[in-house]
Every structure is written in C-alpha cells, then in structure tokens.
Length: 478
Image 1 (tube, rainbow, N blue to C red):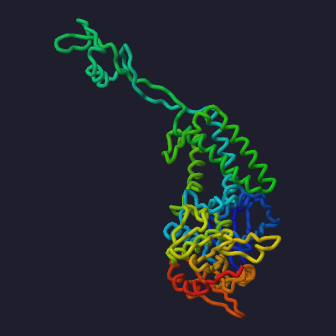
Image 2 (image 1 turned 90 degrees about the vertical axis):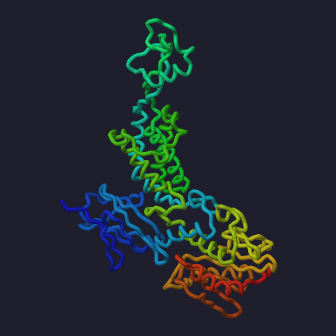
Image 3 (image 1 turned 135 degrees about the vertical axis):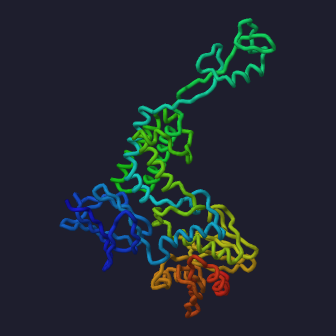
C-alpha cells in the first residue's frame, strides 16, 4: 500500500503537507496527491476532483485568499495557509492587536459599520463539513437517553435511620427545642437532666436530575450549530452547499424541540471543565470535543490574539482601512465617536478636524458633480478629512495592495477618478509599504501623495507625511 503524500506546488517551489500547517504565497497553487484511494478531495468544505494519473493534481487560484485552508484527502486532514505579498497573516493579526490601542473600539467580535463581524463563511462551512454530522449524531443520542446525575441534599424527616446527619440535627434541635423536642422518660436526647425525643431530624436525601453540565453543553451546541448554519445560508452559497446546510438546520431545529433541549435551552456551560461522562461515554465525549473546538475556533473577541486558523480572506481590505483611519486619527488627536467604527458620522472628531470613514460624504462637506445630475452617484471615500473652520477637505484612499514595495498602478488609476468626480487637485493613497517618506506624483496641476503605512510602528511615518497631506487640503468646488 502506497503512503498518502500531499504537496503544494507554486512555480519552482514545493512544500510537503503534514501535521503542521505550511504558509505559502497566495497565487496559483497546484495540489499534488500521491497514494490516495479516491480522486475526490474536499478543499475549504467543497468537493473537488483530482486529475487522473499516478500523481493526481488539482490547480486552484488562491490569489486573494489570505487565510488558512482545510484540505481533506481519504479522511486525513491537512491545513495550509496562503499569505499575500503585503503584510501576510502575521501583519493582519498585528493590525488587529494595535487597533485596540490606537483609538478603534471593538465590541465582542470585530465589527464594522455594517454590523458584520470577522467571520468568513468558507471557514464556517469547512468547520461544519468537519463536525456537523458527528455533532448532530452525538447530541441526538444524548437527548434520546440523557444521563442523569445524582445530587445530595438535606431534608427534615420525622424518623431517623442510616441517613441521619448528626451535626446538622443537633444544630436544628438547639435552634428551637420547644418546636423540635418532645418530653419522654426513655427519649433519645438528654438535656438538663431530662430526656426527649426529636420530632424532626436532618437526613441526607439523594435525588437525580437531567440538569447537568454535560447535558447543558450538548443542548447549547445546538444553538451554536443553528447560528453558524444560518450564517452560511445567508451568504447564498451554491446549490450543493445550500442542500447540506438546510439538512443540518432541519435536524438541528428538530432536536431543539426535544423536551430535554427545551428544558436546558436557557443555560450556558461557559468554560466549565470536562465532566466524568464526557470522558467515559462516547456520545458525551464527542459533544465535548465539538464544543471545545467550536469555542476555540469562533468564540474569540478582538481583545485577545486572533486564532491561528481564522480566515481573513474577505476582510483584509476592511481591516487595513480601519487601521489606516485609526493611525490618521491618532496623528491628528481625534477621538472615536462610536464604539463600533463607522456607525456614526464622522467616525472620528477633534477640535479642528472630522474624519469620515467608508461612508457617503455629507453634501455640506463634499459633493460630486454628479450630485446635481439626474443620476447621482453613491461613492464612499475610504477616508475623508474635513477641516471644520475653513471647509477644506482631503481624500485618503486606503489600498491594501502592493507592487514591488510601491503602490500599484491600478490604485493610482482608481484614485485619479476621484479627482475628476469631486473636482479636487490632490488625493492620497495609503498602502502597506515599508516605512519612509511619502512620495508625491504631480503634473498639470494634479497631485497624488503615496503614503506607506504598515505595522508595527506606523506613527513615525504618518507623522512625517502628514504635513504633505494637510498642505493638500482644498475647498471642494461643487
């Protein structure tokens, strides 16, 4: 039998996949598989078909996929990460960490102005593909025959027996002797030379209940599954994905209607430790394993280090935009106006300036020539700096793109269109280049300022370049 071998190929470079994830450049990747029993593999939750031959190949385009990817071949799981030529995965995590300290507030998950969070549906579906069927089978078995737990508590009884608790009984009798003691010459209790019989004694009573941490954890798992499945469905995936997700959701909702699940639905185990039955019983063992992985993968907030297997594929541009806005705001001494960036306009404000982030500019601040036309535009500058006293403005466009350590020509073309739209003469591109002085491209009365900005220490660069940006403030003509 041939051992399974998986390699990644990008041009002349090759990487073998094993137990530890490999980090490779984003781009055209060829997955080479040797020794597999089947030609069907799963990549990020989607079935893919390998080519025929002794070494089976799969070509994938991962140019814009900064994040971790899950590959499953013959039941074996391999992780690999793609990072672009800009800041890479580590740079993204550094920006998120620094956003906590340079003015941007995050509440719970990392939220943007539209209320979306840092959660990628491809990663959600890949996780569901790995765990959903096993999780639902385990929870179904638990709800069909939940294991009760025994609880020892105390009760008052008229008669004693082997379960009488002596010390609590003595305290009870002393607390109210007239109520709990009856005179009897042959009584069990002697006090002040007289004997009495106790009318009540404290006994140990053992009861059983289904309200246990392990059962709560299983019921809580259903709520998480339903939430994640619905997020995937809201992204309008392809038909095959929708069919699987709806099947999972129907099963989840059916289980949620079970009496035990209804009884425990308002409880949360939080970070409760593993219980005995979650080690000895296969159903509970799987429930704990899935719950633990679920909390580890998705139960994070931006006030801690982001998880290493988290995907930023759809959010890298937004993160960089928020990072650039916070750096500019700090350099100008502006404070954030809302806990969630961009919910209120302006997003940052100070004694002299307002900074708008990813929003349509107020007509009193900036208007385009199309605002007076039959078909007004709906453009949203990344960053709009407004000097309140003079009314002058500057547009700064955050471009998470890089070409040979410089801003891309595509970025220059895009910002040039803003100059024509708003009738301005100067615009700034903020891009993830190495620290250094801003470069100014000028001609025919127009000017593009290219401002490099990247972690870990952006403030020195932006402070040095800010005078050039402020010198470009101008009154909008429309």
